[in-house]
Amino acid sequence: MVKVTLIDRKSNALTPSSLRCLSHLPTINMTAGCVHGCAYCYIRGYSQYPGDDAVVVYRNTAEQVARELKRKRKRPIAVYFCPSSDAFMPVQEVLDQSYRTMRLLLENDIGVQFVTKGAIPDRFFDLFSHRPERVAGQIGLTSLNEKLNTAIEPNAASADRRLKDLGRLIDIGVAASLRADPLIHGVTDNDTGIDSLFAQASRQGVRDVSVSYLFLRPAITGSLKRSIQDPELLRRILEPFDQVGRSPIRGKGTGSATHLPTDVRQANLGRIRTIAERHNLKLKICGCKNTDLTVGKCHLTNLTSTARAVQHRSDQSDLW
Ligand code: SF4
Image (cartoon, rainbow, N blue to C red; front, top):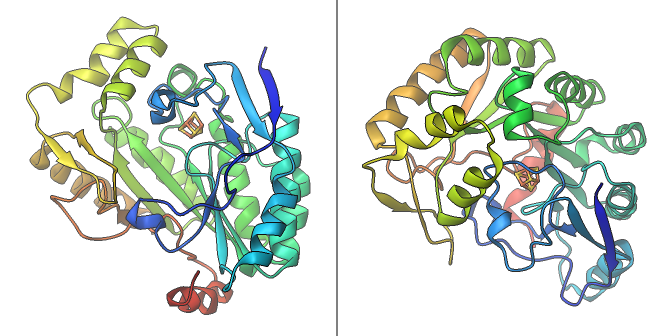
């Protein structure tokens, strides 16, 4: 049973992100906490994290965004949902706030960009279908193995649902891509699993996939140890991080993290790129999380894959 608390927001709803990939867009979190409960989630280390099975919903977010937009000298071209929560988590109060806020933005000709592991309700497809050129979404999914997904992302939507939502977004003209992040070395990155995932995504019309590997920080390691019930699975997740160093994540105040060794990531990402190409997918690797491998972007907020999005993307030099 999820404990839902409704509160008024004390600070701005639209905030800048310290991550380089998000530096050109205002971001918004609809909640503190997230009921998807992903075992690797870094928000469990935040001071305002309300605990597992609890979520704090910021009520009147749409009204607050409207007030903030009025004060802005220059309107943003789009708003990014959500760097530290999920706009489509299965909590009615969250979905209602997300819907009202996204509708307000689109009615004001401001784009909506999101990443989710949730199930997108029908009313959002209807909303997006009126302005598909202003919407871009990434759906997070690393495996078709539901047993594994239940152990690692217990309350996220099923793999089948996430893939169907990707197909529906693409069908209505939304720029949608797959976000295979975080892959877990030796657990979710084997050839057969990646091949099946990419084959299914490609069948839904996906053409872009962003990939990154799990990295560790103390809060993430603690969360994995608390959440993963199967000791053998936990051992397989943590073992590859023995004897590796720390490296910075790009962005102000984002600190450093423990990554898999460079040669391991390089070899695996090369292998995954070959599989992606077999399925006509373009692989994007995040330079924020792989400073030793690339300065590229994972296109977290990029509008890709539809012709109409090209014009929108070319506007991105003139953001807020
Ligand atoms: S969906 Fe995102 S914010 Fe929610 S628990 Fe999973 S990783 Fe964290």
